[in-house]
Length: 83
Image (cartoon, rainbow, N blue to C red):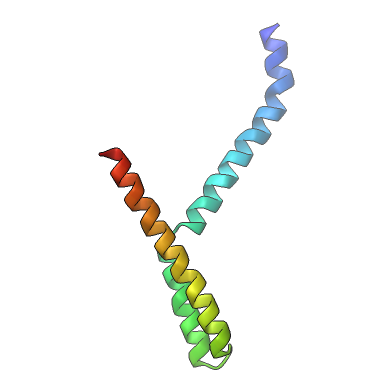
């Protein structure tokens, strides 16, 4: 009976595993400070080359800096919880 259950549930377990891996990858990319800093540098270069307006630059810069602050706060909270 367990063998049949395992065979029938294998595709579902595979989908769940794939979803977890995708979630981990997205979290890593969204919370990678190096990647956000690269985006900030790219944004500054676009602004300096007049590819984007000052208003667009300010808006995107604010969003990226907010993400950096959120990551720093989350890391700080995690360290406090470990103590």
